[in-house]
Amino acid sequence: MFQGIILGLGTVTDVQDRPQFRRLSVDLAGLVAHVEKGGSVAVNGTCLTSVACAGFVHSFDVMEETLQKTNLGLLKKGDKVNIEFPLKWGAEISGHLVQGHVDTVATIVERKQDQDNCRIWFSVPPQFVGQMIPKGSVAIDGISLTLVDVDKKADKISVALIPYALSVTTLGFKQIGDKVNIELDHSAKMLSSSFGPVIESLGADIASMKVDIEKLKKRCL
Image (tube, rainbow, N blue to C red; front, side, top):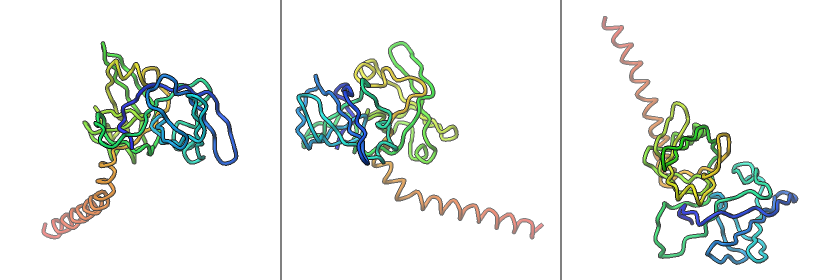
């Protein structure tokens, strides 16, 4: 479990394709926490397991499904990635609870700099936009952020970032067209899963009632 507070940037030092998975090696030099072999690390918001380490360079085996459903499949040698280490029991939570299970990939469609702040818009698949609300939480490339706008008609969301967040994360240099990982707030997913079918059923019932009412009106005229 993570909290979406990025400690800094790691650097991809090697990418090796192997049968049924890809091995990513990332240099974590300069980051505080010590990671042992078998430990977890969130890389661009994706929870990975360190399978080998040499100094500060850790290697992670990424399965094909993860490569397809996240932006990790686009990484190449020299790329920068957001790094976060797992929460420790009793630690203060400054962001929101992030599982490291990416739901989908979004695309940056607009970026505006307004004095010290930066506003970024993302295009998100419609089935995921429907589970988001303004002022709700979202993890973008592992960064805990607050949704500013949720445009369900255009399938777009926006967030605002302060200079510090821009200086320590990949969103500081990502541009229009770049892909980012999206993890919805877990509580929002649970509510959607629990009440979504009920709401859809009620909507269908109401629509059917409206049709019946219109039929009755015509008979009475």
